[in-house]
Length: 337
Image (tube, rainbow, N blue to C red):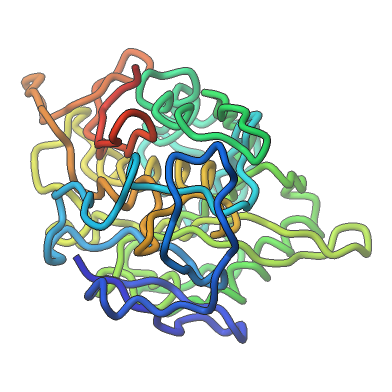
C-alpha cells in the first residue's frame, strides 16, 4: 500500500496523504512517547499537518488488512485529542440541486432528522450501532473509552457559489465556505462536529479526487465571535462519478448507487475524525488511522436480492468497509464485540 505527502490546498502548510509506498511516507518529527496505558510503544514518527485520505479502490494492496510493522494491536496513541464523548455531524450539501435522492432541497437548512436521503438515514442511525462500537476500543488521554455516539445534528443544502464539474476546490475555499455559513447563520459552530462537505458530479474537492483519493478529513480555522476556532471537516466528493475507483462495484443494497457508495466513504471519515481529529492521536507507525488499516476490506458479505451488504445500521443493509479494532492483537471487524 502506498502513501505520500502531496500539497493540494491553497493554505500554506496543508497537505493531503495520497497512496503510493510506505517507505515514502513524509514525516515532520516525533509526537512524543505513547502514554503508559497504550497498547504498545510506537517506534515511528508522524506528521501532524496533513489530511488523511481514503485511497482509491484500485490502489496497490487495498482490501488487505494493514498489519505489518506493528506490535500489540498494531495501532498506537500519540497524545492528541479524540471525540471521546460522542461525534456530532453536520452535512453540508454544496450543490445547485438536491444531491442525493429524497435529500434536502437546495438552499434549505434543518435538523439532521429532516434529511430523508439514505445518507441522512445512515448518519441518524450510525451512533449506537454494533459497527460504530468498534471505535469504543479506543481511548482518550485519560484512558476513557470513546462513546458509541454519533449525533446527526443539522444539514445545510448550500446552493451559493457552487463549484462546477471538474473544478478544483482547495482546503482554503472549503473553510471559507464554512465560514460563510457561520457568518450567515446557516451553520452553528460546534467544536465536536465533523462538517461533512458533499459535492456533485466531478467537483474536485482538494484537487486529487478520483485520481489520488476518494475523500479525506482535515481541520481548519474559522472566526466565531471574533475568536479563532478549529473546525473539523471532511471533503466528501460524489464518489459515484468514479465508480471503479471510489465504489465497490457491486450492486447497491438499497438500490441507490450514489448514496450507497458514499456511505462507505462517509463511515471511514467519521470514525477517523472520532479517533484522530487533529492527526496526532491514533495511527500506526506508517501513519495509517483506524479506518485506513481496513480500507476497502469488507469481510463477509451477503446479497439481499437488491445488492451486496455486510452490516446493518438501523434496519437497513449497507456495504461499509470494516474498521480496525484496538483490542487483542487488533484486526478488521464489522462489529464489536
